[in-house]
Amino acid sequence: MAEIFGGLPNGVGHRQIAMELRAVDGARIADKTVLKMMREMGLSCGIRRETGYHRYGSYRGKVGEAFENVLGRDFSADGPWQKMGTDVTEFKLSFGRAYLAPVYDFGSKEIVAHSISRHPDLAQQEEMLMAAKPGWARPVPHSDMGWQYQHATYVRALADNGFTQSMSRKGNCIDNGATERVFGHLKDEFFRGRDWDTFESFKADLEAYIRHWNNTRRQVRLKGLTPVEFREQALREAA
Image (tube, rainbow, N blue to C red; front, side, top):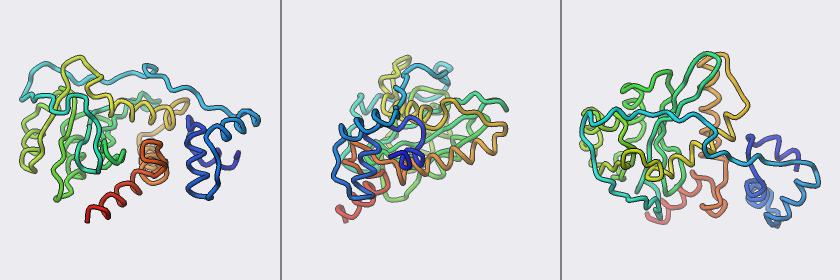
């Protein structure tokens, strides 16, 4: 058990370990049994703090084109590339600040594209969008009303690829709750209690964590599959 914990990020709880044991080792073990063993070994997982981190705000009023909330808080999706969320989150570090702009698939729970930058500018959004164009899907991308998502360049990029843009209402983070939850898990498992001296080292480690999230981190809502495993299974079944 201790060896398994050593290979997982901070903040990973007993359900994650139980899923890993069942999927990788073929163990027949219940979540509660893992929790009991953790307690006996003095191992614990910190409780995720919903508001323990600084939130980056990009709202500057109506500076471009706004869109209706097409999703209406319905983040459910039975397959990949149907509904997606995006936002920007900020990290305060010794070298300054860094920003992550991801595209999160509500169906597969996969971070399908992202940009890590020292500046939350339009160039970051353009880099993120370049990685989020599969050419065969037309998902509904959902965001808040940040200036980036109202900008003509961003709006045109989505429209040119046949995407139906959706926006949260001003001042209502619940409308973008699915993406906000990812930021909460990411900051607890990857960021909490750590610091980096350079942007380059921070970016490399965050890139590694995103690969872990997509390829290794098993999810209860995916019935123990990783996001990539779920996506590949769903595409095979749809073929």
